[in-house]
Amino acid sequence: MLLQTPRARLRRLLRPGGPSPLDGRTVLVTGASSGIGEATAREVARCGASVLLVARRAEELARVAGDITSTGGRATTYVCDLTDSDALDALVEQVLAEHGAVDYLVNNAGRSIRRSLDLSYDRFHDVERTMAINYFGPVRLTLGLLPAMRAQRFGHVVNILSWGVQLKAPKFSAYLASKTALDTWSRIAAREAYGDNVTFTNMRFGLVRTAMVAPTEAYDGLPAMSAEEAAARVVRALEDRPVVWNIPIGVAGELVGFVAPRLMDAVMWRLDQRTNNSAAASGQDAAS
Ligand SMILES: NC(=O)c1ccc[n+]([C@@H]2O[C@H](COP(=O)([O-])OP(=O)(O)OC[C@H]3O[C@@H](n4cnc5c(N)ncnc54)[C@H](OP(=O)(O)O)[C@@H]3O)[C@@H](O)[C@H]2O)c1
Image (cartoon, rainbow, N blue to C red; front, side, top):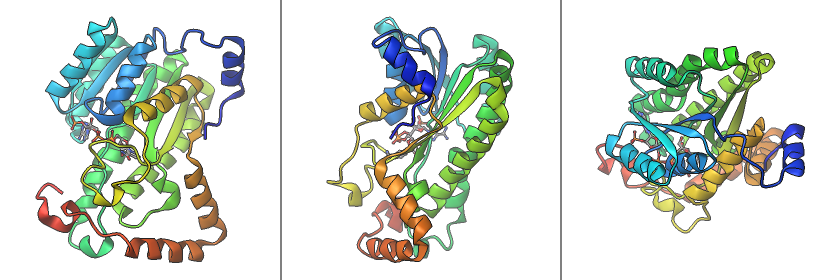
């Protein structure tokens, strides 16, 4: 569900198939080494943008950038652990020195943890590490890039969030709280930056078939977008700059949760009873 701005609707009407607003722009995509971020980086480059790819795995970034440049696109890689504040500040400094203001920022890098409450009592670090990559990292990066965006009076930030911020799905308390924090922070930042033509889109995705969801057996067989389909939505959001992008079930869940919160608790409790923790979440996987 894309709430288009009147300007975007007019642009599509007047120039169907015309050049993308991303053409000639600089777009920074975090988590560009796999999944939605990789597909987004490829699509943004196809639109004519110079794409800056950020993630930890240097070889994967080089693979994606190599593919982009070999087909005539423009791509630069930056290896950075976005949970490392010093590394992130150095990244901002380097990007601004090499490219000047970034026009578009996609806060995509993230980590999901699906673990029930009863397995989480002695795992406060789940809360800390989801906040580190899903909230503190993107906020610090956005704060670093915002002054140059505001000074040039153009900028757009897309946050890759989850329908879970609306559904408040069981077993995702740490993950969804961190995504909700970014959602809320960005809505308020958007109000303050509005007069400088710097805007934000919060995208609440449903299930996307990527490496992130692979360990969760409960998702096997459920309908899901491909990373490429998700990337097409991200590019559309970059071009049209809507305030929010939702899928209908997220909106429906939010409405029912607002009108009948206790009923929603009961429904979610019952659904929760019917699904197990994954093997990884139960502790068999040391990295989980
Ligand atoms: N898949 C879904 O169903 C779904 C649904 C809703 C929202 N999302 C969100 O979509 C985003 C992308 O996820 P995905 O599904 O495409 O999974 P993915 O393929 O696992 O991608 C995650 C990306 O984040 C990067 N990343 C993780 N930790 C990082 C760190 N500390 N510093 C820098 N980069 C880091 C990873 O790169 P490196 O490992 O190379 O650092 C990777 O490129 C996430 O924010 C996720 O929460 C996914």
